[in-house]
Length: 112
Length: 112
Image (cartoon, rainbow over all chains, first blue to last red):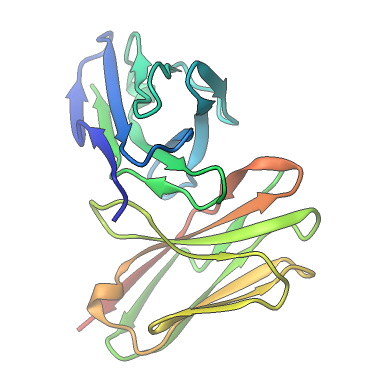
């Protein structure tokens, strides 16, 4: 079983609030990813990191930001939540020697 | 634009039925094809990573084949059980693009 954790699992929040979705892994993986998924749709990459102090935007434009100050921690922040941010957010990581990704259980975000 | 298509979108079968679904991906610049199994409220879990044309992988009652020349992979489940109910995701890795491109998944429901 993969050691990658996400909190909270579910979040309902009002428009305009600042939120941070947490992602941590204990496997020592350098590479970490954030995906966004709307119901019935593909997972879309929104951010990735290849190591500490490295962050890049993914294919899907997102108003969220990420940081990577420690190897094990890759939080995602929305400064001002909007209903259009309602979605599921999945965090993943992988080791350098393999493209297999290990996923967290996801955060289901609802912005009212 | 790299696109991964999965069919069918959803599938309902009876316990004991065998079933299969398809993943179509670009046939050029292939590097790897991943299959993931995603149960509700859990993390997506890697089933197979396939890299060679003609690859066949097997894990218990689940197997997968790969045709990189025509750009498709099949996932087979023999004698489906209710615990096989999940969304099955495939993801394509191109040699020129270092990140996974996911399909929308096939949602399988196995009824007792």
